Image (cartoon, rainbow, N blue to C red):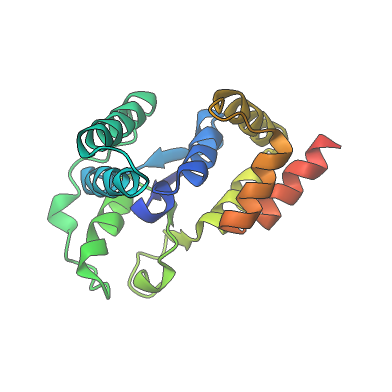
Length: 191
């Protein structure tokens, strides 16, 4: 199965994370991440929740629960042994080296990130494609639009507080994340 490393920046937005991981639940790809990605996600999620009014202890617990839930749902997603490769790629931001190292060790075909400038194609191994979340979403939906639509329908069913319709979900994916192509493919499948 095609594997992709999901960078922290594409996992941090809640709806985008839910959408991308829902596609993985349907077997459209295999998500991968490093322990460093999960640590970053937990840190940023906690701060996001505090900014939105949660008490620090509640935010820390919720952020930790998120990471544990992801690890349980995708128990083969964590890439081991990437640490020796960190620092060998010469990326513009050395803090992103762990993402490429995880992609190499996890035999990923892609890195999904919205920090494209930090992953120049001439510095990333040639067998690894670097894609934005919106490009990856469209490509993944295009693999099997029916299963992708099922993934979104199941995602909508899980989102009950507050409830959100399929149309509202697609509208939000477009408005927040510019997922125009993925939404169009899903709309065409509904017809």
